[in-house]
Length: 145
Image (cartoon, rainbow, N blue to C red; front, side, top):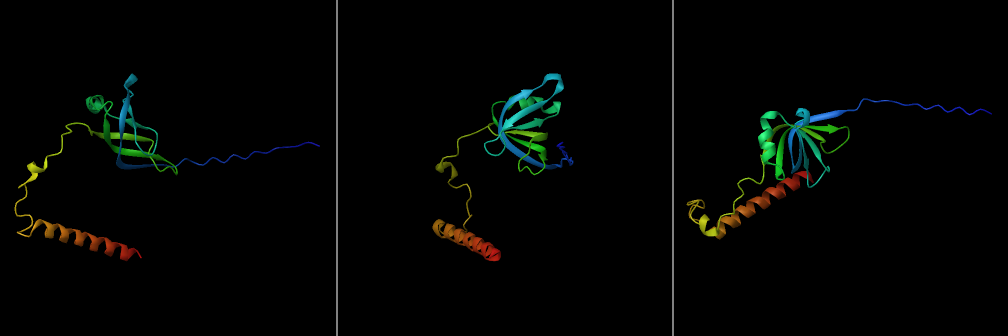
């Protein structure tokens, strides 16, 4: 008795999606070989890494951001049914660690917004703002119910 096996392979085109957006992560690798102009960022959540292709005009920005946390804006590419992008065509690199300053001391903030509460005591003004926010949240939740 002869056994014949038939294998049917169905190829479906892979759907790739692209959208404008940004990703954040640590820029830890740059490849410039043969004008590749690609760096890799490693996000805290989501994919393990994202390849970022950048124009030569952004080379200095990429080099200065090496080993820093960055925000990369551009066209994000997604594979079919994947929730996270696998690559970015970079339009802008923002180094999130540049010019990091200590937050101002409380004394530095005193008097920075005179007249904000229109003479209402601070405690009352804050209580009113909180009540307004609570009412907004309850209205939103009520609409969803």
